[in-house]
View 1 (cartoon, rainbow, N blue to C red):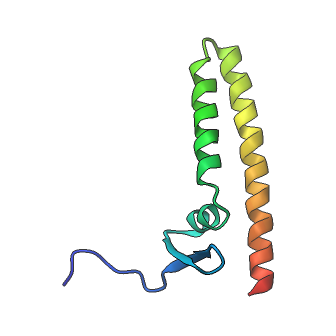
View 2: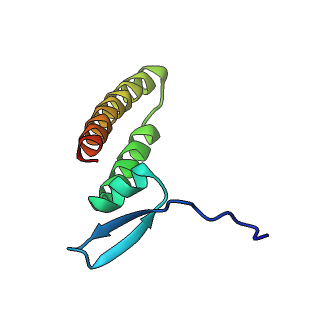
Length: 90
C-alpha cells in the first residue's frame, strides 16, 4: 500500500486561455490560482505583518484587530458570493 493517499477527485484550475492547467488543493487555492491572486495575498500578508509590528500597546492592538476583522468580514462575504455564483452555474 502506498504511503500517501491519492485524491479521488482532484481540483484543477485552467488559466491562460486553456494553455495552463494547475492542480488546486482546495476551494480557496483554486480561487487564488484562477484569478492570479498570489501577489495580492503576499502584499496583504506584508501589510498585516507591518501593522502588527507597529503595535506597542493595547489600544493600538485593538485598532489593528478591528481593521483586520473588517477585512476578513468583507473577504468572507466575497467568498460567499463567489460560492453562490459557482453553485448556480453547476
